[in-house]
Length: 618
Image 1 (cartoon, rainbow, N blue to C red):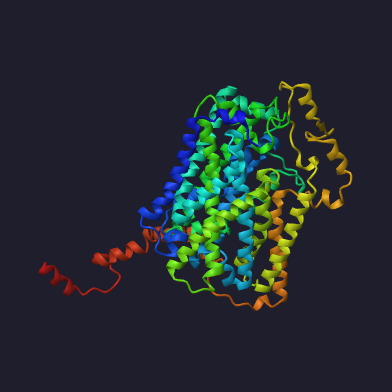
Image 2: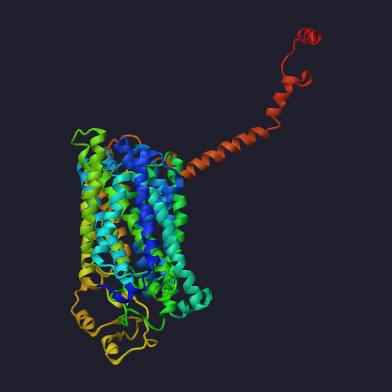
């Protein structure tokens, strides 16, 4: 719904800043489509001719998944549940190490365009098609959510019609993705990461100035229980603890960065394996930067509204509008800055949607068209561009489903974990276990997917109780309520929990089945590990029972010690140690050298006559 008050505060300069970001993004697509010579093959269009370097690829890796979900969802997560999500910085380290050592060397060595080509090489064609279909479904669902998020922000801050914003988002990113291919997507992502950081910094700086310093914000957050980072409760039903974030997050982010087509397509576009690995490590720094900025924005959000929660006070319609509401509240006196924040949200969306559209086109061409149709390179290019337009339109349609889901961050992670977990298990099965065969891979994938969908759908039907989600206290005593407004916020606090629940929800909770408060209440971060582990366990069991021990694999399909950086480092150090030992071997090396040049110390019989005649000649 439109917000007239918000629209009035969105000035001409705000629109200029916002449109400037769109023009630059579209301009990059035009540049790589026409000025730089365009694409001469499907390889140029889909993987940038495998000529990209580490830094732009690293920024693109960051932008692909840290989207508007991060800009809008993570601060709200901190505001409602505390800053335990900062532990994802540790999971990023685990993810980078696993992806760069386990998956990246194999994919780069095989020179694949689609991740799912590996599944046919390792298992069979049926599993490859299964993996491709799962990726398409997962990406469409996630991308629909990502499109809906900034449209919500635009609607709250500027009053632009919600579905008008949804359609314009899809049209702009489809335009430059279709024209410029992967190179345009990567360089646009790099530009948009800068805009995202700038938007965060605008909110942080103004909040710090408004509240009187960083120490005040930290103090307010500590008093409000928002610095609840070190919670070592091992209960898997708890929404966020140290263990759920570290263990669940490691599986989740590895499924996103290690084997997901959107990211692998960027690795293999690098001009060397060294640049591909460096892109991951540079990406780690940018991941930390954006994650820390978004978490501190959440602390700022709480510090500003610690005594008057806009959501409880009905100042916003959904929790995901809290960040746009904060921007409108504290930055309306600075024309252009609200436009910068909306540009940051929009940048996150454009980067993710364009990456998804490009990846969807790549897997469709590589896995579903090229193996079955004899197309020329020019035909494949036009097919890829047509598919980009098709998937762009489809993603816009999927945004309608996003409006029916809950919190942005949890919904996005649930989608990725439910489908990404079983697919991660399949790749781990193929790379680490030479005995795994196609029967085991298919049985494991079906089993893991069934279990993941079971717990995810159950969690959507029976939402976990506040005893497990543990939302923190939200206060409204500092608001200027009317009697009518106060009556609308009839919330009851649990006696032993800092959370709120309506009386209707309390009555409904009494009729919940046993599974609802146990299996369906599993932390959403564990959806991914559950799927992964089920695939590995079932896949190994079926493989061993169906003759997997006698399986003969082509070389290069499983991990080898030469792929590991630690082994290469060991070999390098060993060679240096050997050279140093030779250098300082005074007994052997220097005795031998002296014996060859000084007749007094030579250990062989000398021909004195020949030696004297040589001296006479000289």
